[in-house]
Image 1 (cartoon, rainbow, N blue to C red):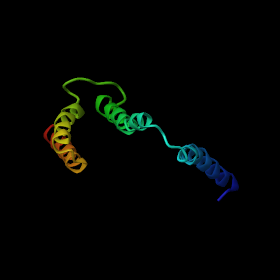
Image 2 (cartoon, rainbow, N blue to C red; image 1 turned 90 degrees about the vertical axis):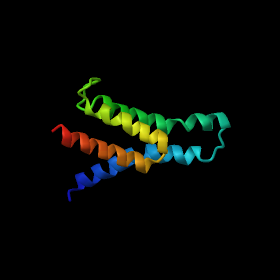
Image 3 (cartoon, one colour; image 1 turned 60 degrees about the vertical axis):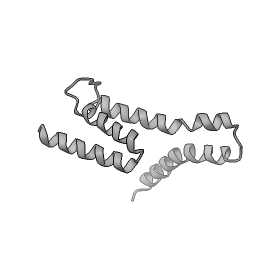
Length: 107
């Protein structure tokens, strides 16, 4: 392997590792107020919702809120399963099964 490639790998490891490690190393020493902890608890669901929304509403990179968008048709019953069961497993199975069914019915 060329030495240039090794330096690129090391540089990229540092560029991605430091921003992940440094906040954890520094902030883990502090005790946050309860309000801040509660506020931070909403960050992961918000990020996940943003990623899912983009996948559903813009599957080809262009926002498509129409009846022809299959992802919306699969999302609605999958969301109902998620709310009813509160189980990631059942939600995942329902989403995969509905998408497979919809793709095989309307090829």
